[in-house]
Length: 438
Image 1 (tube, helix red, strand yellow):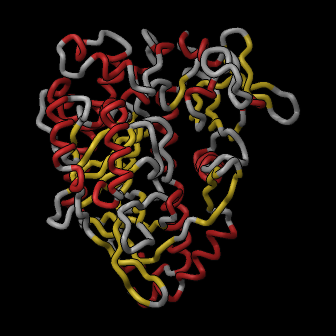
Image 2: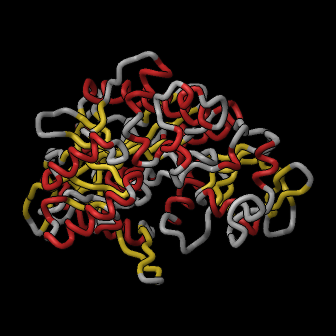
């Protein structure tokens, strides 16, 4: 089977390029687009193993949804001192404008992208919760489609869960909270890093693809204005615009890609926004530390999936541990994403280490430290040979009346044999994730 897959590797990557399967990066004020390299060797996960992951992912997303609802509502978890109040209000993801605002059906975490790694002993660890605008589902969707077309026999001979239901799950999620009217996918436009995904998901779900120029608030409702000037009411917006740029009247007044007053009608319950504004309060890397406690607090259950061992320099005892074991840890800036703001203690010069420790002591809330998990290598096909590389898995959980875990996912791998950082923005590639039916 592998030999057959290698034979059409170039064909699939050429088709991905032709279809514009790219991602964009702003660097030094310049927008650059590049291909997202696809590797033909799939990552396989057995049914039993994925069943286990599914239970843990559902549990985690339910607890995170309860946490966001509580933080912008009764704040019980703060009063009970499970999470420090100071830790919430100093985080960049907390939005005061969301206080007392309840979204449609009280769902905040409509689409969650949970990043996991598997250690060499087989145990899975959660690395990160992405609850604002998680991206990446479109890549394994289109790659699987092209692979199926290139080699139908591969999928006839292997009992693989069909991943073509993601669009159906996403549409169900959007329709469940729709307040009446059309559904749109709101994109910043052609020069956004994930524009391919915006357009692809709109096509697959039947939603309108729109920019802020095509949406207008009139009275207490949102309308989509088509090319002929006709207006249609909108009841749900899957927005791919960050909170701060969503509405210049309520957030960043300099935003030119948002929709004036959309947050006002959202507060009144006249439109659903997916994901909910303010979710950043829960996917701050510092808040990640508290998720196992949230699961016990809100669900009265023990966590099924564990965090990587993590330390908060915010706490004096953790600061002491980090300073004593600095060379054995990876340090992460809680406000950074995409593999940026990550440093390994053992890779720093003595001068850089000294500067970093001074910054750490001055801004302890800004960083977390984690044990370095030597996660499992997976095979990739490169330069005519099979070589091992580090990889993670982004699992997607969609929430309507209950959380559903997509039986697929985005496996990202490092193309650098010496790197643990797999993000596309850092030069990584991706591969399909086969969840087996038995």
